[in-house]
Length: 213
Image 1 (cartoon, rainbow, N blue to C red):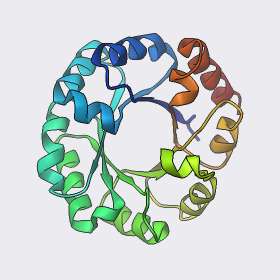
Image 2: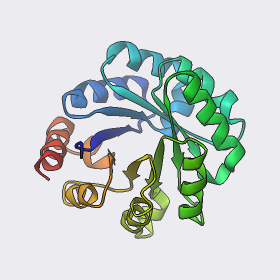
Image 3: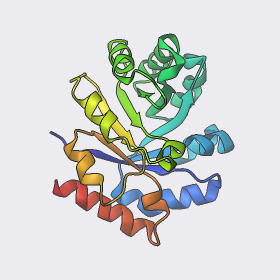
């Protein structure tokens, strides 16, 4: 099995700070995620800028699309996004729209399972519709209430779907190897990197831990 990819969540609203963080951690990560608040605040030009600066990296735009899937996702794929996210709770038609847009651009659609009541059923239905990645995602508010993504990861991994599994939700150095062993293909790290005294050192440590599994 290929080593999981490491995704850094770029969550700042500050355009220049986002670019600076990307440059700092670039040697140690595979995917730049433009977080939902960040993309709402900064718009499609940030996608174009990151694409121009980092042609070798994957770029995920965390749109969390809830409606008008193809229409909303298309300009971001056209700007250079490799992956866009759509909420599983949006329903199958919206998910199919983002999948259609992704396929038209040789890119990927990720289903975000955040707040989906029946994650297994949603994962099965959207995988059958052609989704490329399942996002097991415990949001910030749920993390604050003590929730973790590990149970959901196990449930989705057991399905054996023909998709990659991305995991996000408070992952840090002490838990990242558990996430690898549980079957994650993409590991999303946010605050454990950008909130560290040295984001570059923190990203390097995460990379070394993942490679050691």
